[in-house]
Image (tube, rainbow, N blue to C red):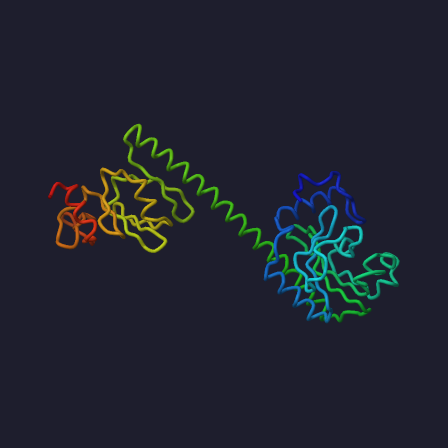
Length: 318
């Protein structure tokens, strides 16, 4: 459920002002985690919480405006979500420390709760709020049992540590999503820039391509390119005295270069024709950097047998 689709004003829970609840819901939505598939990191943390607290059930519970939804649960028969008004966790998120109920049947807030009077027959509950760096409680890491019990101080401290780990994983997860979104935006920008460059080339004979390196968009003049080398999923572009390594394929890059100026001489190499100094039996010598006395420095680039005839034809040597 997107925040924009939630019913406003959100229900104000005890201990939370309307403004606090709006901020808390916005924080929760910013993590884009609701209704996502299980993830191993969170599953491992609930298993560890269950082991430490010696309870059959442990959950990562996140509370939106109408329900509590479980990102991770040790018992797969446990429901994926429950109504918020039934949630023990809605009381746990009002504070910043452990919320513990030794026997729910003896507690005035829970003795008539359907989760207590019926399946799953909750008796014991211990929930530690999942606090963001800004102090908003997204939900809880909780341990649940069907018999009354009481945690030790060591168990309480461990549950607090694990709750912080849950938040750390949520932060990392959000950071990965943001990086992926930025990468997609940059890829879109790169495509747009290349389309623009291609239009400029067709209409104004400007020979330029755009490349992405180290998350930066760079404009490169094709006249500066000496040769191009395939390297697995990457391509090395040798231009001037520099080498640019980009994520691309030879086919994709070849389609962006001026056909009249470049030739494929090998399945792994493309060269600029006016940079070829001489041709040997199995290689072309390409002009590289200028030497100390100003003369050209020559670099051999292999010629593939299937490309040799076309290259010689284009150079008017056959």
